[in-house]
Length: 126
Length: 89
Image 1 (cartoon, rainbow over the protein chains, first blue to last red):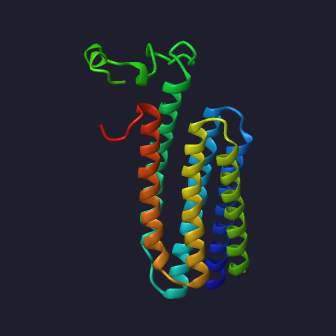
Image 2 (image 1 turned 90 degrees about the vertical axis):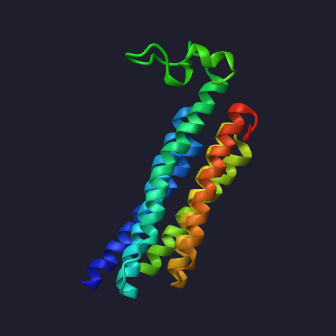
């Protein structure tokens, strides 16, 4: 049983390390700013998640109790990574794009971040 | 077996950390630098957890939690500063 758990820890560590590496390599390799956003926010979060799960199983096997700190960090990272990605994408849209250069927004007229209600536009928001 | 796996993961995340530093140094825009900094914080969390695994201590989990929170808040502050020019209006 311990052997299987050891193997599980090893697998999670190796997968986590590879995903972390792929995420940061994508940050260098991809050439479009918005494509670059995908690699770190998704792959690296998954990589850290793998390492944290490995650490959880490690604490269970070698110290006899399941440690919940890791789950807390994993949950926090999984919650905040999309938010930071959204913030950076929004900053990019407002700094480098106009409504005309963006791809079509599907069934809506414009992308939500450009869709400012008229009364808020006067007070300088957006 | 686990020791080698931990060292492999440390090597991966260390290399990823160096790539982020390279990106921060050579990026052509501010947005890329903020993104690279955010990734660097996440890689630092992974390295701290792995260091805790090597030494068998649990002190680093609290530290990693604080680093995660600070990283999130600082990235949001950076993004807001890029967008609006100030953070607290």
